[in-house]
Length: 466
Image (cartoon, rainbow, N blue to C red; front, side, top):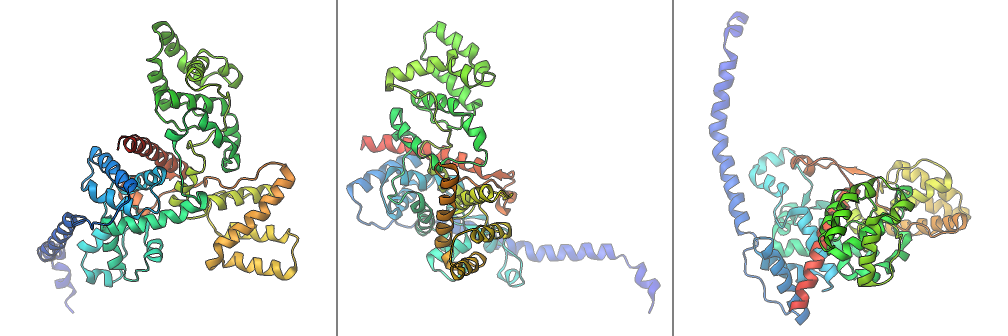
């Protein structure tokens, strides 16, 4: 073999030529697939909307949602509005606002997704070679494929993706998935937002403290006076704030909006003392501050007697946050986080409150079941279920929560936590592709609540006009 001749060949030049040849062959092929995808996307959702009978209230909701989406410049607003009203199991404004908020939150009313595009652009032969999809969520609410497949009973992945990219079928599947979570916290499917909880009506939900425990609970307890301040500001300015007792830039912005209704002298004094009183003063001093007393006096002149302290929460209706949290992590994540929180305290062990059913959680549950007063055979069956819950996951979580709550009440003589926002950061492939930073579930929940409150207030206003 002539090695000298082999090594004298300009392999780099040959590889460059080979690359050019392959490029000329594959680029037109890829362009064809890309054009095919674009053509499909242009036609998605443009079919004639099936004329199905609506009740008078559904028709009002349809017209109201259409107007809202037109105001937001959403393409095919009528198609989206029709699908949302038609496939929601109730016409409750809170429920409809929640569906709208999650579609806006997850896909900005863009039915197709990156994964489906990937399948359209990349040839089928490449898929057959085992090249994985870049993302695992599809449809207008970006639901995980497996979850959506279980709901729609659609075995074919390709058809499933096409169905989820169609506005009607996509919304139908998304609502089914969301409703499965909603019923766990709102069996009646009646959800309220700030617009229905203004004034003293907002105090009625403060009795639901068992929904408000948090992995940073001690900090929440110290913020009750500022949470009350935020509620009064929200009511007076019609600008729903997160009632977490953290008086940051948004709270200060709403304070400045409130100051415009004050007499000139009070307005000047209010704005000058605002930042110092909000950031420096501690609880007792803040309650006596000019800022707090001014807002309190104005609120009481409109709504009646106020409360100086309310338990902080991320949404005006406390249970709402757990729908968003479970949606982001998985169903029962918030309830499992509450179980983790209780068991860690009851057994005096370290356990993450992340809402994830992993090895550490299973080990802790096994240890907890070992402390229960049960017959040996019952305890043995319990431990088998903990290792492989399968279709009995719902029953298992309910029973463990029952026993943990009972022990908690006996020990603390207080309400046990029913749900907790999981303490976990998410950074999925879709976030990486979109160059989004790592996000804590609590931040996701706050963003979703903001969308919900906006749509809930606008929907209620428009419904009253029709």
